[in-house]
Image (cartoon, rainbow, N blue to C red; front, top):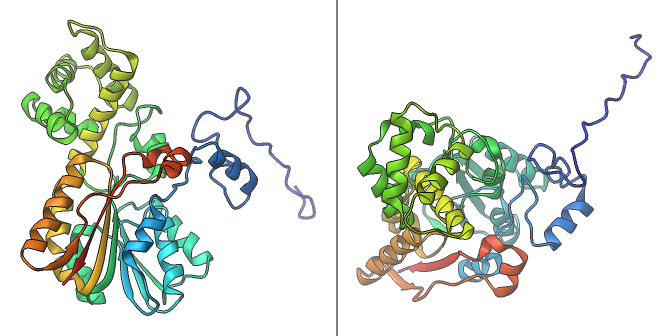
Amino acid sequence: MSEDQEPKHIRRERYTGKHPKTFSEKYKEQQPERYAEDISKIMEQGRTPAGMHRSICVAEILEILKVQPGETGLDATLGYGGHSLELLKALNKEGRLFATDVDPFELPRTRERLHALGYGEEHLQIRQMNFSGIDRLVSEAGRFDFILADLGVSSMQIDNPERGFSMKLNGPLDLRLNPKNGKPAREFLKTTDQETLQEVLTENADEPYSEEIAAMIMKTIRNGEEISTSAQLKDVISEALAKLPFQLSKEDVKKSCQRSFQALRIAVNNEFGVLEQFLSKLPDSLSPGGRVAILSFHSGEDRRVKKAFQYFEREGVFSSVSREPIRASAKECFDNPRAKSAKLRWAIKS
């Protein structure tokens, strides 16, 4: 090809059917800056575009944290950056926001997205780290005037089959928030025992058929069969439930699969242990009068947050805590069904 010739345009491979189905085919959804009209239509239907995340309880969080220009704050779970963006707007480029996340793939994209909106290093400091290490961040930044932690898994992680978070999309059975650390769920299953696995399913997800599911998983592995993809795990769980002396509805089978995936994700990432470390370090991380808001999506998470806040209030560390969790509004739940399980709690440092 001569230098003055333009390279031949290669058409994007068409997806089958009327609408894109796989994550890779949804290229418009993953480029919101180029396809704003398509993104708007998807969100109007109560769906979250692939590769995006819709922040939950934004208005309620801003009301709790009462961010003032000049303050220093922390978004302990950066994710897609939706909450961070609203906190940065409230700071009005006076003060600083620190943000942490363990995901090595989504973090650079979020940093680039927020920097493109005018929030550079002087306003936003992003660190790839687990929020259980908040004490290390305090030694650098000082105590925070406000802290936010959204404990939910981001939609970008759920929607990408390569991450293995969802049974709806077949992919490697990984489930790690940081795929570069620790061992994936498929390795966890190979190295655990039936009693431990049953306990994981019960403690992490209140799975009523934990014994049957754990037994079937262990039997499958002992027989030399692979459980290395999300589809294979789903099939094994479904097989276990099909052998019950009574028939479950398709919806009940689906819920057991969802709970099992959730339980394994929590175990693989030690999510409860990490949360407990974070909660124990909160008092020394907040300035006097500092505010903290924590958004949880699991009864085990909410229970730990509630007990920690109540304990620190009794000890006089917190002057006030939420008595009941704040739930997403009916409209938000309609617009974004993933908000239905959200529980928001807050506390104020004495």
